[in-house]
Length: 325
Image 1 (cartoon, rainbow, N blue to C red):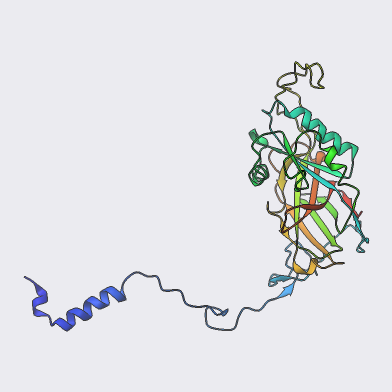
Image 2: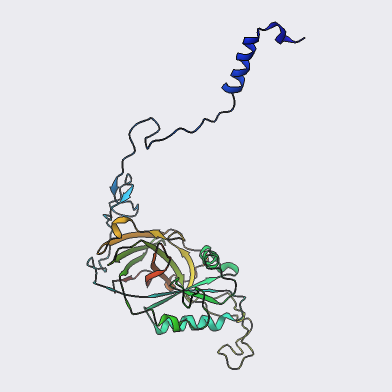
């Protein structure tokens, strides 16, 4: 029996309309916000103050950093900016334990760092086994590394390309020691809880847009045999060292980043000429591959936000500090 025969037509239409339009799911069309809160009130106010949770005067309600953050410091860094800064170089070196041609380039990179001590800072990035990190992958993909060994100096193009090979000193010598308008100073500490704290001071003498990067490295790492294609090359320093070199020592191995891979953006208050910006970064858990706390170093650098080029850098052993220079 058809029950709709006994129901007036207009009731059927009303009932079907309710079913279609009144119960068709639970989502609603988005409504314009107009910058107000959900109850139609006034816009959420901007609170300008210290936004760093690690600062002594952190304001949890702050939405806009005003460079007012204060920290418990050891007093090793001057609050007065020098009139200029000395430029340093960062060598981001991409290698692998299975790379038979890498030992000689690794030696060149480390020799450059030793010869130009406190001027050139290597960061060794592995594309193999347990030494590979998210930064290794990031650099490899960002700069399209399709063959190794390769390195990048200050993330800038040299001879119209980022990736270089051979001895990096030929490029580094033309960078370091020059005057630049961006500088860094560092205070680092290893806490009783095995946490690493890094207070980065960024000073600028020219207006710009800047990103801070903080990287943890370790020297003297062993237990990762290195493939060696020079084992039968009598003219190489790696002649008859074995293939692989079982007791090979890896230096400047990148273990962790204390900032996002894309860097930490300096707020507007720290971008104008003559300004200083301070920010603390913390590594709460030591990397599992870490072997010796005494061999840990921090490499911090400032990059141009628009171009990505590293403008200056600073490095210290964990637990030490470095003033402006």
